[in-house]
Every structure is written in C-alpha cells, then in structure tokens.
Length: 448
Ligand code: SF4
Ligand code: SF4
Image 1 (cartoon, helix red, strand yellow):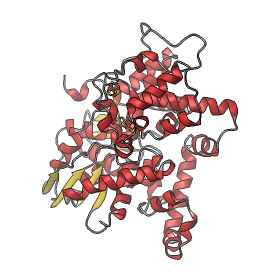
Image 2 (cartoon, helix red, strand yellow):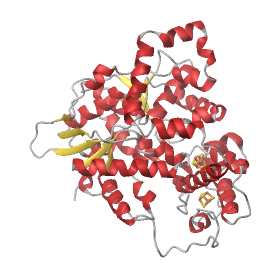
Image 3 (cartoon, protein in one colour):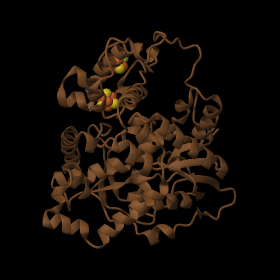
Image 4 (tube, protein in one colour):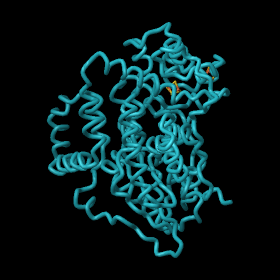
C-alpha cells in the first residue's frame, strides 16, 4: 500500500493495563508510569533551549520531570514556583526526540499546566487571558474574522506606521510593539469573502481534501492558506474549506485549559465527519501536532476517542501530502539560497522533517543550505515570546547567528508563530533587504 493511503497510527492511550501508581485520593493528574520512565540519563539536556540558555537543572526537562514527580508524590505543592518552572518551558518537545526512554514530555508538561490552572480555578477568579482570549476569541471564528478586519483597517489607514513614527507604539508592551513590526499586510475582508468554498482540480477520482485553515493562520496568513490550497489543487486534489471548523485547541491545551481544548476538538471532529473527506490537511506545525493527538484528549470518553482516532487517521501536514503526490510542475525558477527552520511541532511532534526539505529542493534554481541546529526552537512557542519575552529573544538571537551563517536569501518555515518570530529575527539582526522569511507553501507557490 502507498504510504499516502496508509492511515496514521492513532492508538488509544488509555491502556487499561497501565498501573496507576498515584496514591488514591491524590489530586495529581500525572500518570506515574510516564514519569518513572525517566531514568535521569540527561540525554535530553543538550537538546533543551532553556537549559542551554540557563545551564540550570531546574530549566531542563529532567529537572522539570523531577518537580512533576515531587507533585505526583505529594511531596511538592502546585504553587507559584512550580508554575514558574513549568511556564519557562517552551513546550518545543526537542527533549522527546532526544530521549531514549520515550518519555512523553509534551503531555506531561500539559498535565502540569492543567493542574496549575485547576489550582487557580479553585482559588481565584478566572484571568483576563482565560476569559477574553481563550473563551471569547479562540472559541468564536467570527470574532477572529472581526479581529482580522480591524487589523486590516488599521494597516490600511496607516495607523501602524503612524504609531511607529510618532513613538505612540511605545505605549504597547515591548513584546507586542516589537512583534507588530514583523506583521505583514493582511488580506482584506473582500479578498477573504471571495474565497471559493471548494477548489476543484477537474480530475476524475480526485482526492477530497478538507482544508484545516486554522484561526491565526487564516487571519494573519490568509494568502499562505490560499497558496497551499492552490498547490493541492494543482497536485490533483479537490480542496474543501470546511465552514464549521474552529480553532484546533492547541493553545488551550498548552496553557492547561484542557476543557476548552476538548470542546474545540469535538466541534472539529463533527465538522470534518460531516464533510466526508479523504484527508484533512493543514499547513501549521503547531495546529497539526494537536490535531494528530486529539485521541490523547479523550482517554475517559471511549466513543469520542474512537471518533478522534478516525479523524487523526486522515490528518496530514501539507508537506507530507505534497511530497507523496505526483511531483508538482514548476514553471518558474527561483535563483536563490534557501534554508529551512523546522517547526518544533512538525519535527518533534509529528516527525515530519524530510518532506519540506525535499519539496524546497525540487524548485528549479534553488540552492538549499542546511542550517546548524535547524530543529532547535526559535523561541516563538505559541505565546511564549509574549509571556517570556527576554528568554524568547535570547533564544531567537542565538538562532539568528545560525541563520546568518547560511547566507540564505530565504529562511522558510511551516508555522505562523515561527514565521513571525523569523521575521522579527531578521529585523533584530539587521538583515532586512538581504533575507526574507516565508512559509514553505508560499515559496513553492511562487515557482508554479
Ligand atoms: S519542551 Fe523544549 S524547553 Fe521544554 S523541557 Fe523539553 S526541550 Fe526543554
Ligand atoms: S533523556 Fe529521557 S530518560 Fe533521559 S533524563 Fe531526559 S527525559 Fe529522562
């Protein structure tokens, strides 16, 4: 069987034979078996960006797992210090790739953050972040579109430039003021309205693709989504924009808002079931990693877990699918040096590393340069570059030294957060005019 047609391996994670070692009555949500898999070898330490920056055990995966173990054994409290150490982690999962014992660090840190949020729910009012961002914005696609329209209007009347020139931008918190400089012109509401709900390839027996457009991706990088759909269409697929889809829930899950993540996952599973597609495709590594792990979120709901497994079996990153379909015909040459920054959640979360590199190298004229440490996090990590600005920028500045060494004209990546971070990195490194950051799909579409 062609790899493309093989369903993803989505196996249940609620193995009933797993011994739950947490004492009865404990409030811990950790699976002690997962924690005890860590044999303290330290192989993960050199792979961890926060350990590399700080050189302290508490900033390493092994150190964080030791803290989780303390909480699971009720020797440590879920307090502000525990929260600080868990939140300093990027959630990049480079430690999972490095770990010989298969410790599922990503799910452990999500559980740790869920316990922190549970604790806060019990003791305090919900935060503004939870009420405004997680509940009101990310659960409502309409509000995201309105936000997109407001951003487009501000850009169109020059508010962004004016605020920059007059210094008004300084009233914004520094992370946001810096990040807004990296935001390109976003698509107009009219351009967004013109999108065809189905893009037909015109081929008999075309694969039917349900395109997962994402929330941030579809507002900030609408053109990249259109480029991805065009590439799939050119590769012989019928592409359907499933209207009822919502945010993937990744940001909720990473922030410990598990109930919100599960609610969004259910809405997506239902939407794509009704669309009856052959594959579900997305182009954002962070979203894709969450979408491919939906079945892990339903360990106590067997019916939903089965539906999630069916969903996961159809999930593909756009690079994966395009690398397996008959090669695209490019009509233009791109005479340029190109390097690639892995999206952590595409490389470490989904194991997709070769396909984007293969696709880039198929473009006529491109000279591909592999970058040192390409799969090490750029410091974006969802909203980490806002919540942990200093650490994020230290990691980014180190990353840009590696980027600069390649002397590439294009640094390409596969996730909206990484893309914005790379654009910001180019500004910080003074490389404007010499280097451009772009999504892999945009580079491929440029050569069609
Ligand atoms: S997820 Fe990344 S930052 Fe967090 S412990 Fe693992 S390697 Fe370090
Ligand atoms: S590599 Fe794996 S087993 Fe070794 S210390 Fe890190 S998490 Fe533990």
